[in-house]
Length: 94
Image 1 (tube, rainbow, N blue to C red):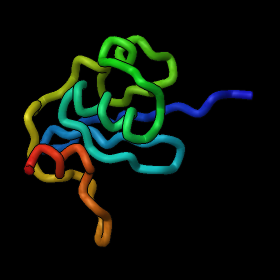
Image 2 (cartoon, rainbow, N blue to C red; image 1 turned 30 degrees about the vertical axis):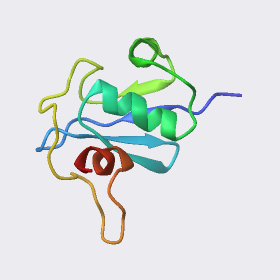
Image 3 (cartoon, rainbow, N blue to C red; image 1 turned 60 degrees about the horizontal axis):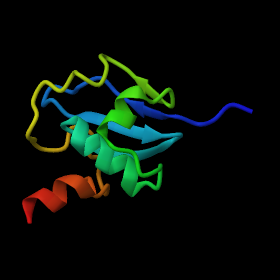
């Protein structure tokens, strides 16, 4: 039986990358560190950034773990009506 994997989409125009696990959108990451936090918050292990870079369970689209065009943020790229912003972005605003 194949394991489910996380998918990191290509960067949007504002530089964020949507992160999904199965059909669930975990949020938008703007750096490898934020991606690692999203995966931890979703209960996908106690991975650190090196574990994320080397993981075979992450599908990278539009570039690998080194592609973060606008590290440091911006508005959510994929927020749908009624969807809450990523918890990672909220925690940085506080």
